[in-house]
Length: 116
Image (cartoon, rainbow, N blue to C red; front, top):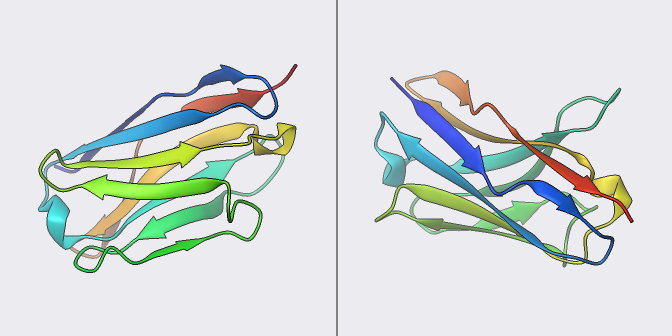
């Protein structure tokens, strides 16, 4: 059974940083691409960043390019999202996501609030 557990969210001032973690289990982590999505109140869930399995190639939403960095540690079965220069518009619930055996799996989400 796939399990994704996010952590690291919280309240931060504009311009601050947070690092989110997603601990994965129940599948072969090193073989799967991993993604971070977010959903703000009243908005649709959107892709923030993705990292492939073998090459570690990354891609980002235009709104976070140059500020967010996705990475993975296959030895720890964990994917990270380093978020720098946070803005109020980054406020959302952040979710970890992967696909295993043709089924998509989501974590429970972690709240990020950017406010002064």
